[in-house]
Length: 195
Image 1 (cartoon, rainbow, N blue to C red):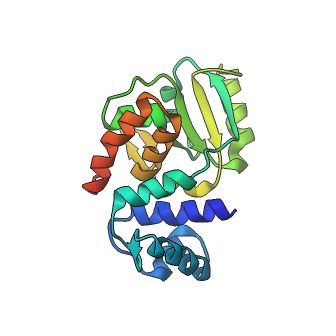
Image 2 (image 1 turned 45 degrees about the horizontal axis):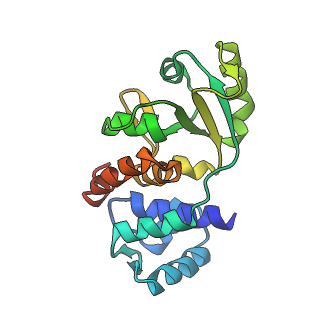
Image 3 (image 1 turned 120 degrees about the horizontal axis):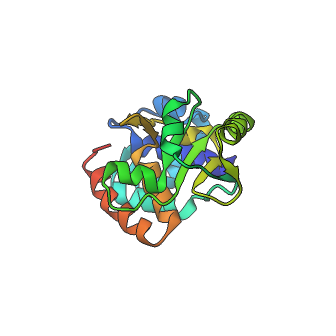
């Protein structure tokens, strides 16, 4: 859980447009105020923040990238038209990596649709996908099961729900290869506070 708490704090800091108080950060990151204070001290010692003000977004993002653990729990499917299926569902999700990047800046070919779901929804998603003709196993769709906070400040773009910009950048970096180049391009948007 410790890693999730750090991720939550960094996600909230990097996603919010305004400087948060420690209490606001505690609520948004779903962590105790004590945990917030301890972690902020650590970030302050490294010169990344002052109180809760970010001194350099790129350096803070790089710090997060260094401590972030890519989720290991996922399932893969082969689906003929995955976007159509997502547009019709009422279930909670947030798209990341190739499709999310393609919707924002159209640099990467959307070769695989990755999206986060809540762990408690896993069996509902599995049943929905297999009933709609998806084949279970290696394929063009990957559902990622991790801490629900990864969907913090998700947004809807062209009927598709996408993760927040800092989370997308981290996910693209963790993919490696051309996705890293796309992440570098998105960092410019993060610096401009465009999300």
